[in-house]
Image 1 (cartoon, rainbow, N blue to C red):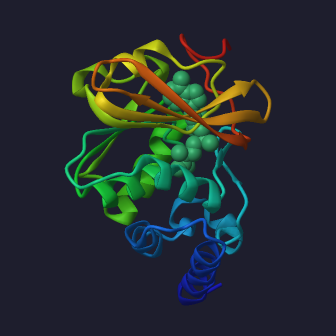
Image 2 (image 1 turned 180 degrees about the vertical axis):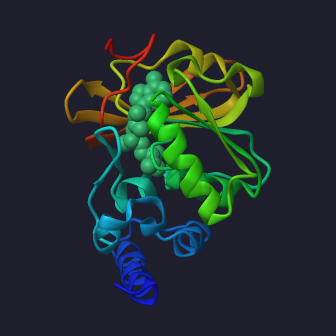
Image 3 (image 1 turned 120 degrees about the vertical axis):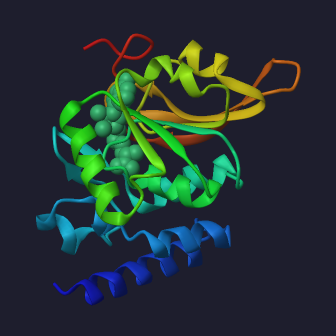
Length: 220
Ligand code: SAM
C-alpha cells in the first residue's frame, strides 16, 4: 500500500474517533494527524495500522488501539511546557504524541532492550529522537533524574499504583494508569495529587493492557 493511501485511511480513523466523541481536544486530533500509527509498527503491519485495535510490536508486546491512546491523552490534559514521563515506551508512538502536546521533551522508560531500540528507530524516522528520550529500565521506579512531573502516563497494567510514581508527581500533578489483574483486565485510573499532597482517584472503567512488570509492578 502506498504511503498516501495509508495516510488517507488514517485520516478516516481520526475523523471516526472524533465523530464517536473519543477525540475531543483539537490539539490531540492535530497530533494524531501529524503522527499516523503506521510510522510506529513494522512494515508488515502498515496496512492494519489504521484499524482501531492493538497491534503486535516486537518482544510479544503491543501498540495500543488508537481510541485507548486518545482516551489517555484526553485525561492527561497535557499543556505546553509540562514536565512529563511515560512508563512503557513500546513503539514510541504515545511518547511522540506527548511530545507534540507539551511542545517539548518527553522521558519514557522501557524495560525490554529490543523495544528500546525499536522505539528509538521509529522516533528517529518520525523526527522525534531529539525530544523523546527513551530510557532503558524499570519504569515502576519512575525516572528520578527528571522528577517531579506534571503528568505521568503508564501504558501497562499494574497490580497497584507504584509508590515512586506518586512521589515523583508535582503537587497538582496527575498520573494516568491502568490498575487491576495480570491478564487483560484493569481499571483506568486518574490519580490526582492535590496541592496538599493528598491523593484523589477517579476510575474511568475497564481497559486491557499488557502487564507492568517490575519492582513496584508484577513480578516476572
Ligand atoms: N506506549 C506504547 C506505545 O505507544 O507503543 C505501548 C506500550 S505497550 C502496551 C506496554 C509496554 O510497557 C511494553 O513495551 C512493555 O515492555 C512495557 N513495560 C512493562 N513493564 C514495564 C516497566 N516496569 N518499565 C518500563 N516498561 C515496561
